[in-house]
Image (cartoon, rainbow, N blue to C red; front, side):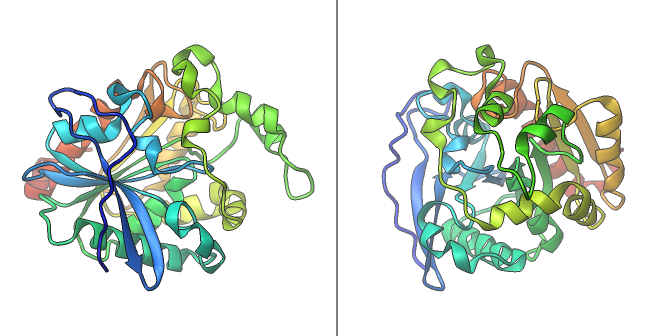
Length: 311
């Protein structure tokens, strides 16, 4: 399985000492399926972040087009972390094979194989930190539970939850009624002043959604999320945006989320001020990324000195 680098179309810019280095695209062959993503490699990385985008998006979500100052990839690389933003199975180069990815175990296999192929023999530092957004939280948690290489340091989840806001539940519809597209857009992209104007609506990061994601979405809040959470055995960071309009973000709802992670050595839940559902492409992104990277640094400490890691 060989990786083939190509220059990223993302414009180069200096971000917190990262210099003019842009993430580059990678495509690897996994059992005849091309798997793609963006890679930003740090010299002698402290750890590796594997970032998994949400629905109807692609890996460039993590390197905000035209706004390098908002990029997780550039910010984390400047702090000594390698970042792999993977196109989830059924997205990017693997989209033509999306019908072969209906089983969760298959998606986990593909994600791990693509990660191993893209990272190759390069250093992973202290280990791998998983960072998931929205629907991408499902694969993030499945990979964390699998933890096949035993090197998962912890995970971050955002843009998800256990219960929709009442208005969101009505807008999203159900099995017998299609979602209200305009309403969904308003949930994801308001208030407008928390996002760059040219990012509103998400056209620059948009992708078609594989059919299996409908099943994932329907079974997530009350079935798979709590079931997977009970099996997670690494530290967990959960972020709710202040202006999250899809999922409940009140204290009671966040307490319910934290309570699911019964086997995790630490669970940290917080609300990100001035953030919206798409946290990593809004103006709150740099502060949000700093908070989670700080948690990652604590996870590295936990790996070396678990007795010092407190709830």
